[in-house]
Image (cartoon, rainbow, N blue to C red; front, side, top):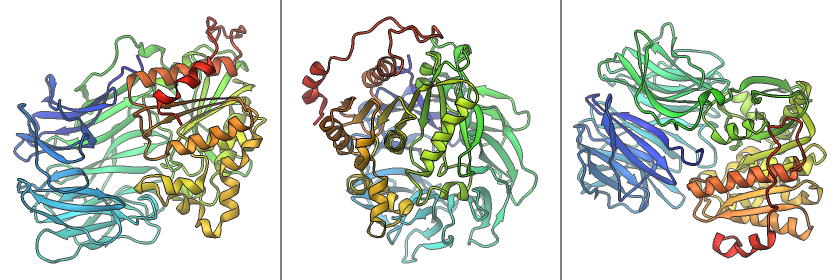
Length: 618
């Protein structure tokens, strides 16, 4: 049921507010759906799936422009159906299209190799021009109401947008160069949008150390924070009359919707329901906001909230009838202090029926490393909690959502500070009297996979096993193998490799494999552009050479995360079986009863080895 759960995202209202479009992903394919806002929807794309989550309504509401996942180009299709037509003649991977208000132009981003350009073309595709100059990476362009100017955020190629980013504007046509109207060293300015009259710009900025909703004049002058606080904001959006701004508010991984008057005034909640409310947009009559919402009890769906009454209505329903929401567990927001005094926040999931001191513990480490464990739908977490596992998700130092100081506490400290915080999570669960210390498992994907390897190499006596999904093991080679956006990521966190050789060597798990004494399950996508298969292959060779206990599976055609139904099923069953056999030692009876499964056959390694060729495994 988890694997067959469709995922809805990217809601967008038609220009007149009567239509609602969104993306629906299922079995590694993403399609565009559209219908009346209070009626049924139908699938619009068929021979092309949508790539990069990017599509846009035409200003007249009759057509869509979207990125094709097949060729990376821009295509146009009618709301009423029919075959799409390719409209772009530009080489490269194109995405993030946005129409000018008058319908004459389409702005979009174009990636060619290591370069990302902001481009503009005529709506018929016959004329194209590049807008930006320089090496900074542009993000999410937005039009001025006069259709003559663009605004966007940009960040240096060797940093990340939360490290440092600026707001840039440019006129279309003529020879005026783009102008930075807001920026600064080690300051993030992000998600800019013009007001309906074009006189103001709303964005988020962290001049105070926290990303807060901020307003500036169209020329960049008179910056003013509209809601200053130690919770971080995002996705600000003007109401059609320009009087109010809606934005997201991140409270320990819960995302709320708040509004604040343009120009300043009292901010207040619009949607405070626990969970994850994102992607807000106003209806044309200013009376309601459409947004995407999910929680640990339900998958993402589109909702509409009345601004005056706060009454909510569901606009899509992707819930599966076979999953009882009353059987699902909500996390508790918890905090602990690491041995060095750093306070850490995390999400703690405890089974509904539990026996003190007898549960296994999964330390589920998020990726990034600059990311966050949020209060969202995660079917695999629920699957494991129902099997009696306590799951704790540490938002270790370096995580997003808690301000710049919290985030930058990982600088120079990756592979050490995160380990300290993850060990603190184990101590917290033990201090609560929830877990058995001989059943503690490290689990993570991507940078969380890296932290999993660090746990097993630096604290081998704490962890009974590790589960690493597409984790990096050699931070030297990672920068050479990864895609454009994360090529310099490690250097921004750990300093230049040329100046920090000993640190990079010591923090690469591949150099400490001889410390591993617990079994490992390693899962990898063969087509992963972020963490290449070579990273997993490298540590598997070392595990094999040392005759250590491991299981390795490579999924053909999968990228950074598993999307095909058969692979989600296979990976979840492998994880379940690995935990039972290597940690719980099933069929040994479990004191909870919940974990006492029927015996299953052991993994046939020889048969698994024979499948290497068809799996794309080296």
